Image (cartoon, rainbow, N blue to C red; front, side):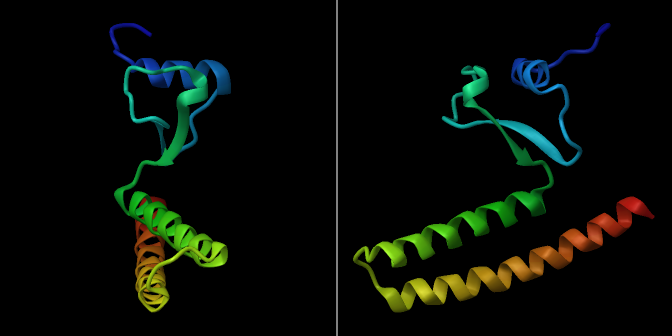
Length: 105
């Protein structure tokens, strides 16, 4: 490793999983940066656009699940939010495609 410094979470991840895929970073499930147990570590997209896409996908999934579970709430508002987020997702997909083209060029 020489003089380079590595984060403990990254070292733990690589020790258990051999590799860190391109475009991803190691994140902590519980948000505690000091908790570097392998059970607390997960991969997240490292590009800001991909992170936003992940957040939108997560929110849409949560809204769909809430609707499926019949939880109280303004269903019309929930559907509106889903439509807005899906439009954002389509925009982000275009941005990701453009970034990918730049990287491969």
